[in-house]
Length: 285
Image 1 (cartoon, rainbow, N blue to C red):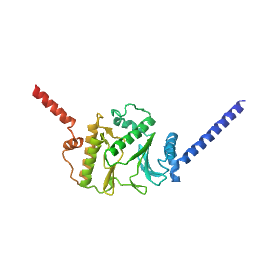
Image 2 (cartoon, rainbow, N blue to C red; image 1 turned 120 degrees about the vertical axis):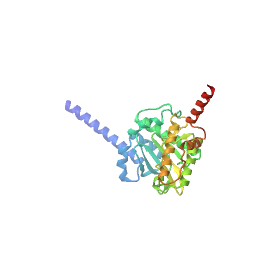
Image 3 (cartoon, helix red, strand yellow; image 1 turned 180 degrees about the horizontal axis):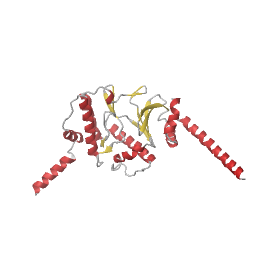
Image 4 (cartoon, rainbow, N blue to C red; image 1 turned 120 degrees about the horizontal axis):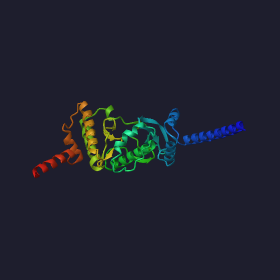
């Protein structure tokens, strides 16, 4: 009897495995990578829920199929997607298993737009995707040159593809930079702050594209509301990063970063407010 029971359980387990595998293959083929060689790598990285999200987006014609990876990082991969009308889109998938999300909490906690935070890995990945979509939408509406956001679901964001024929536009680090580029970056930072109400918080030559002489800003997952308690600190860092890059290229920049900070914000910095407050107290005394 013991032998029969083990055989039955084994048979049941085998049947369950067969159905799970069949279901997995079915779901996979609904959201198929055009490049067959990348399919196994794709499935090793993304879990079933992510695959189902991609299926939903594909079924809604947000994209038809994915051609392959165009950008890969610790936290996300960006795929070249193609719609049924042959329009290209960028499909950014945040990795649920990424360990770096814990370090990213500083860009979420304190932002009044996100008061409820699930601190498990999928919760953070999905919040990060939603955050990037919301930030891109605000920046795009404010007239900032960013990829137009089209849709998001779970840990996936779909946006305008910046480039041609599946080749993304080069980043600023990879092309010749000019004084005009520097001026354009500062103008964009002002728009991001004053019109979109955001600070990029991770701005550098690595997340600015240059296409046919025009600059396009991307990677807005780290962007925070100007009401975030560390927004000024993040803005100072953005300014420092940008100035250092252009200075290394021998391009003249605004030497007084405090003045540049004030110009971008369009109002006095916290340090200036504190100095004025102290002076007022001294006069009153």
